[in-house]
Each structure stands twice: as structure tokens, then as C-alpha cells.
Amino acid sequence: MAILKFRVYLEEDDSVYRDIVINHKQSFADLHFAILKAYEFDSKHQATFFRSNDNWLQGREISFEKYDKKYVAEPLIMAETLIGSEIRDTNQRFIYLYDFQKSWTFLIELINVSKEENPKITYPAVSRSEGIGPQQYGTKSLLGDKFAEIEEKYDIKEATEGFSEEGDSDDTETEENFEEENGTEEEF
Image (cartoon, helix red, strand yellow):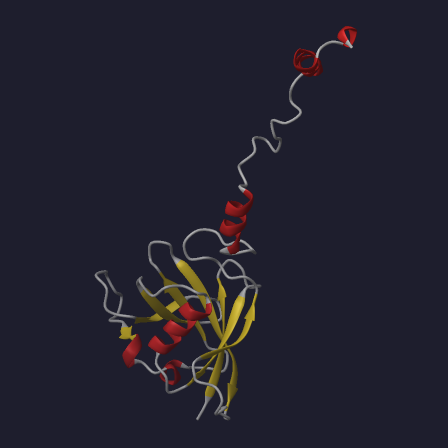
């Protein structure tokens, strides 16, 4: 049995990637869900793969389902299409589009083929994860969900132009306020 290792990275940033190992007899639906899990995306949106060449041109479409759009040729269906059946060469590439509204585009390259299946691994699996992936809805900070807790705990408020109001008053006002509250030097 062949185990295929694919490198899956965002079209905009090839320094953020996930390596996914998958059995050649598994379907594109299995790869689809593995990519979503690897990047911590939900599975609520439309998705499709395209077989590609070395220049990243879109070839035959392998869609999650047949969508209400015009197709050049009838798409293959992910759940019915085995990954091994679409491998044409040792450097096979695919383009994966997820959420047609946001247009998440992932480039997928076959980087290794192994004949040995690891009995300790449930395929598909992520074998390597590099970089902080994008957050599907909004921005992701290094602190992640912890930032909201820190913000609430310390009551962090937005400062205007990077400065607080403290220290903005005129020195003469401060002296006058001091004298009113504590008396003048002459009264001592």
C-alpha cells in the first residue's frame, strides 16, 4: 500500500504549511477534511480540488458536490474519487479552494511516496506543521483566545494615539489644585 505525503500551504505564504500523510486508496473527501482539521477550519463551506501542473494551472475539478455553477467538464466527486487515481507524476500538484466567498486557496504538492504504512498512525494525519495558520474568521494573535481573558482581567482600554490622559494637564493647574486642597505656603 502506498502512503502519500502532501505539503499543503496557503497560496499567499509558503512558509506556513502542513504536511499530510494519506493512504493512496483514501478519497479526496478524506484529504479535504484533513486539510480543514490541520488548519483549524470548520467544514461549513463549499470546497473543490483541481488537478494541477508545475505552473499551478487548474485542470480537472474534483468537487465536494456538484454546485450550482457552470462547469467546463463534469466534476469528479471527492467522496467517489480515490487520491491514487489522480496521481499522474511523482511531483503531482493540486489546488484546493475552500469557501468560495472568502476564496481560501491552498497549493498542494506531493513530496513523498512511501510503501510502508505505519500501524501507529490513523490516516490521514498531519506529520508536520510549520507556522501559525490563518484564522478562518478574523485575525489570530499569538495569544489566541487568552487575549480576551487578559484584556478583561486587566481592563485594557484603547488609548488614543498611544498616550493616556495622565500627565496631560498643565503644571499651573496642578499647583492651583494642590493649593486649594492643602492651603498655600503662607498659611503654614
